[in-house]
Length: 186
Image (cartoon, rainbow, N blue to C red):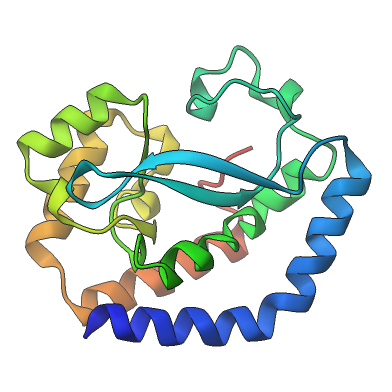
C-alpha cells in the first residue's frame, strides 16, 4: 500500500515539476560541460545496488565518493551546483527512483556503493530491510554533520518507529530545514 501511495504522489509531483526540472537540466548543461543528470550507484533495500539520478552539481569526472570525503568539496561544485544543493533541487530526479520502486519518500538515505562501513553497520542492525528514502530521520538530525554510527542509530530508531504519522512528521521537518537552508550539503 505504501509503495502505491509513493508512486501516486511521485507521479503527481513529476507532472507538476516536469517543466521546472527541464529548465534546471538546461541551466546545468549551459553552466558546465557534462550531462545534466548524474547517475550514482547506491545501495538499496536488501543491499541491492541501483542507479539513482540526481541533477549534476559537481564537475564531470569528480570522484564518486561521499562529498565530505573530497579534498575540497567546494572546488568540485559547479556555479549552479551550490544553489541546487542548498535548495535540495538536485534531489528532484529521485522521483524516478520512487516510480521504479527503488526508493520511497522517507527512509534511510541510500548509501553509496563504496560506503562499506555504513553498509556493514546498517546490515548488522537490519536497516537494509528498509527501502531507502529521499529524506530520513538521520537527515533531519544532522545529515552529513553526524558520524556513521549516529546515522545508523537514527536509522534503527526509524526502523522501530516507522509509521505514516512519523513519515509525515519527517517530511514536514525536512521541508522546514530546506526552507531555512539548515543541514544542507554545500
